[in-house]
Amino acid sequence: MPGQADRRANPDRPRPAFKLWLSALLDRHGDRILRVKGLIRTSAGANLIVIHGVQHSMHPPVHLVGKDDGQPSLLVFITRGLVAARSKEV
Image (cartoon, rainbow, N blue to C red; front, top):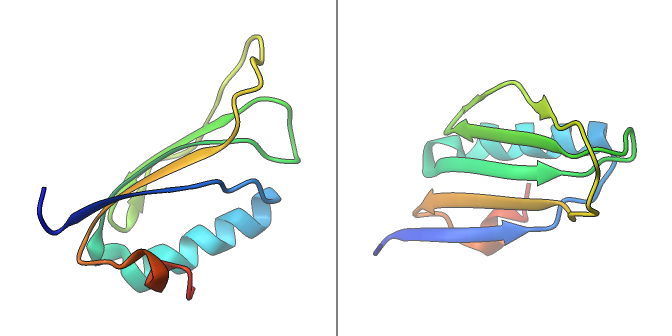
């Protein structure tokens, strides 16, 4: 759709650093971030964490259980009027 972007990132970082980065990103650009969805692999555990949210509101993370297939971390941002390079400035 015009005016919207699908931005993908690989957030393989320690969990506290990722939470701080995501909080800063949403604080600064939350009105232009329509959706956030992701599968996050952290150094704190073997299983992935599922995250999702809308603008400034993030739902509680869900820790997946079961056999780990080695899926890498993946984040998807659906934005409006946010240039990918500006999101890196956070």
